[in-house]
Length: 446
Image (cartoon, rainbow, N blue to C red; front, side):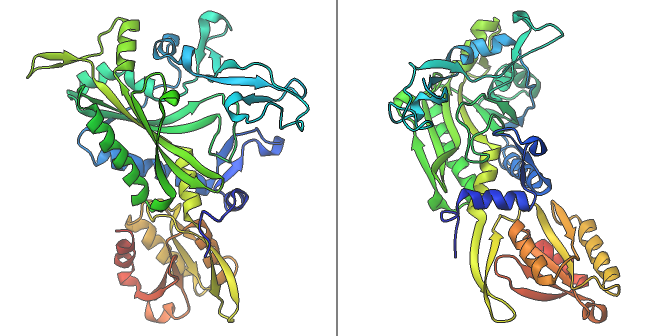
């Protein structure tokens, strides 16, 4: 059997296009580099990842609230946060081919793009924020930025949420949404792109309690991935060294996954101290503090920030779930089976109803079974009906897209009012009366 550590990236990319998970953006025009469109199955998977995150960290907790802030913000937000002055990458250019690199990604003194002919210019800083203009006139006064993170929308709304919800620390605000970074080096499919989606939490705590809460959030975030089926041995924690800490961070720990090309960050959990609230207080003139009525103490909360990339999480679940195994066909031949062992809650299609054939005698009962399952509301997702190709090919297709169970209606079903339920991972099949079918399916997703 082959797991995710043995698969190469091209195999994952091929499956994603072939089965409708991801497409190159603007492909009919030659594509736009480092931009991807989520197809019919991909958008289902992506939405389920976000829903699983929201369920775990907002709905299942009593100390969390949600927010959806605007992408465009007042220009002074990014000045106060330090993004205008600090959100940069060091760049070098090849003197021969003019190719541009991040200086920390270049290991030699000569350019690898032109075979070592060219040398590099001195490094200079490049701000990663995308710029645009509001209104009909493109002027300095109308310049705004597309947000490079969702966090600042939470910080500038701290008082609004605090006053409207009547919460007190410790409590958190969660947000999922688009962000944009003009990355110089992109690649590895959807791992590093310029347009992406984030799932971020800003958790406000009393100073002095920040280190304990930071450690708790590190473990909670790690548990989220393993609870959704990610193999623990393919995950690791990496502590940021002092030289790589962001300007706002007291401590940062990354959760990394072992991708086909090596370890890569899927989430960072940072102790941002009171940096952001203090910075916005000073810049705006509004006091972003909390007054404790019991202790009669006013303080600026410290902030713990678990920040995850939606697209990287999607890629992690896809890579980790990808499996190849040898099975014996009905004719006794050994053949390869490809399947995505996605957690049932993440599967784009929850149940596939597969009549044994397109025979007109089977179709009415098969459609009846399909509507029964859809109408029962027992699965949070798509229930597919598929009667094309042979039953074996349809099983293989559902395996490859991660469908947990298939329901087959055959000619015996016309007489005994029973159907066959097939498990994706084990390929075991059980015969169940149609009257008991809903309970059996419900138990599978419990």
